[in-house]
Structures are given as C-alpha cells and as structure tokens.
Image (spheres, helix red, strand yellow):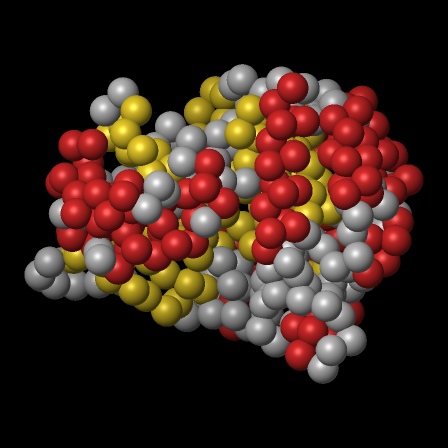
Amino acid sequence: MRLPAHLYVHVPLCRSKCAYCDFYSLPLSSATEGTTAVANSLAAQALAWLDRDVAPRPLRSVYIGGGTPSVLGADLARLVEVLTSSFPLEPDVEVTIEANPESLDRNLVEALARAGVTRVSLGAQSLDDTVLAFLERPHDAAAVRAAARAVHEAGLALSLDLICGIPGQTAQSWIDTVNGAINLGPEHVSVYPLSIEAGTPLAAAVAIGDVQEPDPDVAADMMLLAQHVLGQAGLERYEVANYARRGAESRHNTAYWTGMPYLGVGPGAHGMLDVETAAAVGFVSARTPGVARLRYAVACDLSAGLTPMPRVDTESLSRVEAAREDVMLGLRLVRGVHEEDIVAAGVASVIDGLAEDGLVELVDHRWRTTERGWLLGNEVFGAVWAGE
C-alpha cells in the first residue's frame, strides 16, 4: 500500500475568465493575500499527503493545471521546487505546468526549468486574433509565438492546446492555425471541439441568440483535417483529442486513461485512490464491502480548498464499475482495449452493439473506436459506462 505515482495540483486563479470555460477558477484578485500565500497553501496541502500513514511512491508525473498556473509568476517556480524536492521522484519524472501566453515570459520559463519542470502545456487555442477575441482570450497570436519560443529556448517540451468548431471560425482560419501550430515545433498538440457548458457567458449568449450554436458537423470536419495535417507533420493521434511525436505522449494524462491512481491537490482538484489507500487515509472504511477504488474532489472554495486537510467529496466504485470505467477510458486511446478486458468488465454485449453500429472494431485482439466512433465518442463512452 503506497501513495499514487501521479500528482495533480490545481491552481484556481486566472487573469480573466474566458467565455467558454467552466473549470473552477477565480479572478487573480481573489487571491487577497497574494500569489505567494496561494502557492504556499497548495504546497502545504500536497506535503500533507507525505504525513499520512501511507508510504510514498516515487512520482512518475506531476501536473500543475488550472485555472492558469502561470499567473503565479515566480511563486509557481517556487511551488514546483518544493514539490520536486519533497516528494521522491522517478529519474525521468514528467513535470508539466499549464500556462497562458500572456503570463509566460522567458524569465519565468527559465525559472521553471531550474525548478524541475520538463514540459509546458500552452493554452494557445487559436492563432487567429479574431477567434481569440471571440473566445475572450487575454492574449493574441503574437504572444503565443513568443511564449513558444521561450519554452524551446529553455529546453522544455512544448504542448499546444487548440480549439475548433468555433462559431465564425472559417476553414481557412483553422488550417492556418494548425499549420501555424506545427511551425512552432510542439512535441504534443491537443485539439478540442468547442463545447457549450452550462453557466458560462458563452452558453448565455447562445441561449439568447447572440451567438450561433456550434455545428457538430463543422467541428467533426475540422477534427478530421487536424488529424490529417498533424499526422503528416509526425504528430500522430494517440487519444481522442491528443497528438504527439513518438515518445512524447502525456504520461500524466495517460495515467488517467489507464486507470492509474493519482493524488489531487487544490480547490476543484480530483483524485483517485485504490481502496486500500483510501481506507488508510480515512476516506472509506476498510470494512466497506464491494469497493474497488475511490474518486474524490477537493472542495471548490479558494479558502477551504487550500487548507492542508480540506473537505473532499467522495465517490466509491465497485469492482464492476471500476472495470467498466477502465474500458470506457481505455477506448479513448487509439490502441483501444484488449478483448479479454472487455469480457472481464461484462460489457461484451455492449461492444457488440457498438460494432454493429460501426462505432468500434476489433483489430489484433483489441477493441478500438472506428473513425466514426472517434467522432461520436460520447455515444461510445456513455454506452459502455451505462453497461447497455
């Protein structure tokens, strides 16, 4: 029984809130005691796991996301340094920070590299200034290019996030963005279709008719185009929305998709523990029957979520649910899921039905989504999770 080998830290601050975003984050001004206090509190919450009665395991990945971690500035580098000097680490540990172009400069990138960061996930979203303005991003395309150069000059791996299917986004704008992203030399690219999330300003604008609802067919065409262009550039799709050069796949996110336990720190963060570890830290009784793993979410509150032992909401999964979840997440990966795991999870009949609908296929004893199944992923994943 040991702590997970993967750590996620959530920084709940942004310079400004983008119109489409529903992740838990607050304006930078909400950090009334300053970014140093926030960084110190996040570090204390992470280190509190080392004081629990569970042996640490060398970390294979650390991921600091948000929010916008780079708004912490030099305090982000100090947070990374505390984590990388306090937790045992694998020799080739992957340490990723999310950043926005407007809050990432050469000095900060160099400080992050010295602190142990190996990889930067840059929220570019587009290289079209009109599209960026529509999304209410606080940067322009020139800032993306400058930030990418700084990452390369510091010797760090670069991942870029891009969004497609945006109302008003033309095919030419999207082609230019994808090609422009390739020219920035990333090892990894994530491509997401715009999603209208309840409670966001964009959802309100769509509801009153000020903004046209995104067309899923247009988004699908753009996803296919991105797959083709990125593939030609040596960035192969390995997951629903993620592309990488060989060997540059996100280790941290792959842990999520393959059912690996992970720690979540910071308000709004999620974590997942096996039942033995969950019982050892008091999240579940050791005598609770039928529980295989436990998911938890740290309270979405900037103050309560920054205490060393915050309130958490928990969800227990049975062995059947855990096996089904592993299949659902595994089908996100291009390599798919071995047929034996499909049978063990009790979803063989579900997979057969999806195959009849042309959404999954069996290749070399592994079930994987077809091109149509990839583009209709929510239908596939929902059916597997429901078990019907």
